[in-house]
Amino acid sequence: MSDNKPYPQADLERLIIPQPVGTMGTDLPDVRVEMLEKLDEKHVLMMGDNPSLPRMPDKPTLQDFFNLRMNESTRRHLLESAKRALDDGHDEKVVLACMLHDITNASLIRVDHGYWGAQLIAPYVDEEIAWAVKYHQALRYTPDPELNYEYPELYRKLFGEDYEPPEYIKRDAAFAMQHKWYMTSRYITLYDIYFFDELDEPVTIEEFDGIIARNFRQPVEGLGFDDSPSSHMWRTMIWPNNFL
Ligand SMILES: [Fe+2]
Ligand SMILES: [Fe+2]
Image (cartoon, rainbow, N blue to C red; front, side, top):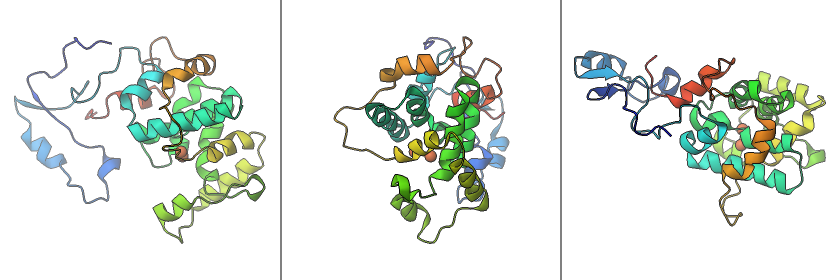
């Protein structure tokens, strides 16, 4: 950790303008103009480490993102899903797919999270794992009675009784269901349960260090700094408040 490094923009008031996708179309105030008007020798727009967030190491690993950037409920959901898959004897690809399936929900973006998540992890995992993460989003809406998978009750609550998923979700689910990797993605949906209160002890990411070491290619430069097709997405999680 590099906690004694000075913070950038020290002695200045750092202003944060929320990302457009987070506020567009909502009742949240548009603070952009107000913030820009405030700029003077004492006020700047946030760039770099935000002192209000836990500081990431210079070469962050997947474990660091779990521990320092995820909200508690998503971290718990992912680790408990992975633990259940492991306890049921699934292979490491399925376990890792379960562990990563909602990775962007925690600290990047919720919209189309399966697609974003797949792209985020693709440079570092077996193609089958990224594929499973991508398609779990569409399969989540799609029953498979032979496997005892029903449309989730939770979705009725979240989206209303009459919600119909859009065409691209139906198309992608139909594609996934006849694919050779279907079951890898379907297992994600079968373990996509909130297991609150059922496990005695909280699961930690460190319990999966071995599985991660064997199945996730951590870059030596650290996630975000290796110039992969998704490095910018990891950097966005390191510095979610950067103006640019
Ligand atoms: Fe999901
Ligand atoms: Fe999930």
